Image (cartoon, rainbow, N blue to C red; front, side, top):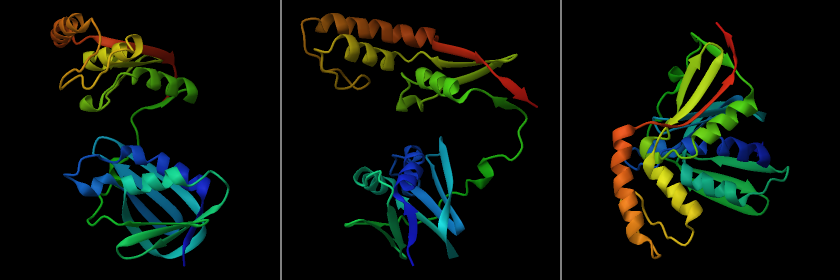
Length: 238
């Protein structure tokens, strides 16, 4: 029998985990989302070995046998784009080497990835030395601002630091990302093809931009100073 889930809930599950899938084909199993279904629980996990996303939802139906599959992230990402947000059902049919989604008049089939998905249950500790409680919106906005100029090259790293009841979120200065942001924002007549591998620019100030880039690129690696810092108060549970 098919596994039935609401379209809105299905899209939420995928959107909250898909971002953590790997883009590197060298480890194909990490390019997919691990879906586990046991009894009336559905668990979706994605990781690229740097990030980990996990979402658990309750199903209206009960599954007798344990289901543990890996669906390619690109395929399921395309499915999410074409189903709507209406409060309807998605029927999921799982086979030995493929998965079939039925929605309205739509049939969407995808192969499954072969291999064993890493056991991530041990990566999330059950006990913590320190627990920080902060306002969700303020915390999210701080991370959002600090990560504006992060790059995939640097694994989108931001820094957390505590000082008494103050949490400081900062981002190390990334010249490549900053220059790309400045050029795209304030010089829209310029075409930016690549910051790290080369520049294709249009306009009369090409030489000035190139000199600016070379000089400050060297300066960046010399200074490596923090570009963004944001702090707010929080409470601690020890």
